[in-house]
Length: 78
Image (cartoon, rainbow, N blue to C red):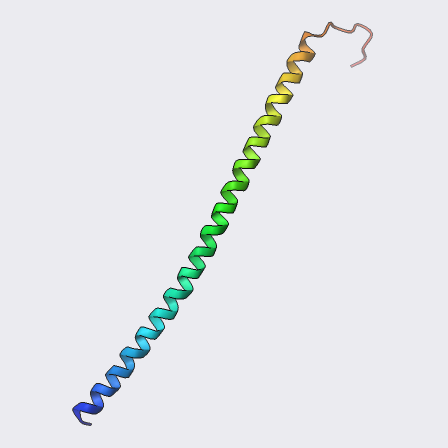
C-alpha cells in the first residue's frame, strides 16, 4: 500500500469523523433549543401559578379576617 492510498484512506476517515461530529452537534443544539424553550415555558407557567395562588391566599386571609369581626351567632349549630 502506497503513501497516496494511505493518505486517501485517512482523509476519508477524517471526513466521516467530521461529518459525524457535525451531525451530532446539530442534533444536540436543536435538542438544547427545545429544552430551553420548554424550560422558559415552565418557568412562565410556574410564575403565573405562584402569583395566582398568592392572590387567592391573600383573599382567603382577608375573608377570614372579616368573618372574625362578625358578632357571634348564638343560635348557630356547629
